[in-house]
Image (tube, rainbow, N blue to C red):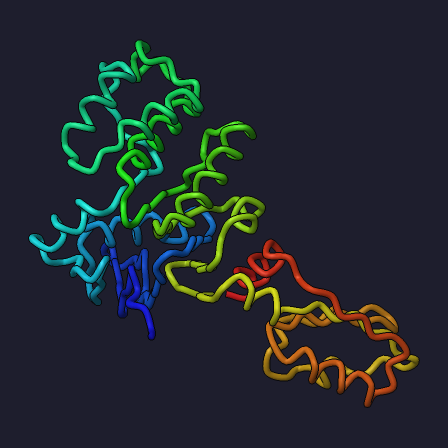
Length: 297
């Protein structure tokens, strides 16, 4: 049976005057998965997240989160009871202590897990009596994560969650995301830290200049993208390899490198037909897939 997407948009667009921040976004996020939303700074990731949460109204298009329409005020309020959100700038009340902040936020939620909050308070080494305004950026990030994770939400949305964390904090975060997903929490997070994404994500979305360029599982990307290094006694013209799925061709003397998003087998077959003396096919890391996708756009 096909599951209902936790997040789904159709032609979602946001413009500011004549500038389009998000363009015709068709996004689908499946339940019980970790979906990474990759893009350069200014690609439209934060604007998309704010539209999904009802914080910014779309210029056109539509979307649902947990089956509830993002543009319907009543449905949006109900949706946000089931969604936890960690914003990129981690807005918190600076005059409160850490302990006061936790107590204040917990009062709004009937599903608050004090045991999880206490556990994370110790793990993150957050000083309960220190005022939020005196915390480092990394500590503020940890506190924001604690406030989100202690709710055990159906959907956890994070905007650049590792920003400001040291390597130990990042490791804690990644382990926590994997554990939450295993417990049935759907996770959607934006990032430009590709090495972290590759460790935990099930599904990859790549946004550039407001357009969704890639929406596929990480396994699908790993299976389809290939780098093919070729050597010829007499180099053929590049046009021989300009077939569907070939994203880039580099030639230097008798050597040629072909970067393919699909149809690697067709490239290899054509190389053999053109008397290649060496054919080497290698998988492509997510970082290279991302850079190539953005470059082509």
